[in-house]
Length: 291
Image: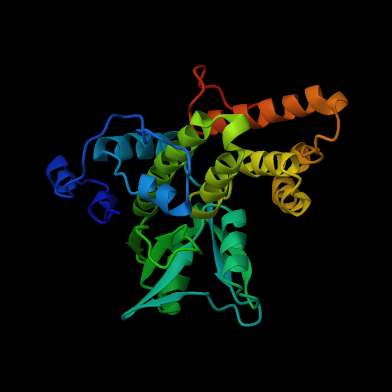
């Protein structure tokens, strides 16, 4: 996976960016010729494909213009208010998360039982930077994957302006969105009858390694698990789905008899359309409708 270091410069020129030596694929991520027999290793290999720097910046610019973050989240020890940070050689890194659900996933996966989730408004960044400095934090890392030993998430210095923070965040989210689109395209290329396990594996990989903050991913996993007779898996995915609020409750029925077929198909269609819309794969490019 490539380094995002130079992409983090808000005013980086094209010469600096192309020095990363990124390959220039088509704007749409390319799928492997065969998607049968998928494994976590083959999915990881798919994600090692490199987005073009122009595409990263196109998506990042749209994020900054249309959906900039109002708040970011981190882990803290409630007893003493200390940040849960990481040591990287001589640096102290503070993981920042785009959503409280991403922070919760990190906390639970890493089994950090003594910490809670806190956040800050970007409008109050100046005071937050002062607290980082007082705590000895010198670098920030965005949406760190709790399941991977290594990460290519970008680092940003803790003495940072709002513009620099949002720029670094948007670059990381743009790459993450591109990788999510790759996996959604793989998911969409699989045939239901023959490749149900591969469909679920692809969605679970997206959930665990790309973005756990997309409700439609959990919804589809729950529906597939129900079809497979995996009630524990269905219930686990349902719990995570219902964290997104009342619009996502009671939406993961099992298909027990033919009488439920039409209603189940409607749920599947709504969840699929929501997922495609999230990653910009609907021709209308309209936001997903609430279920």
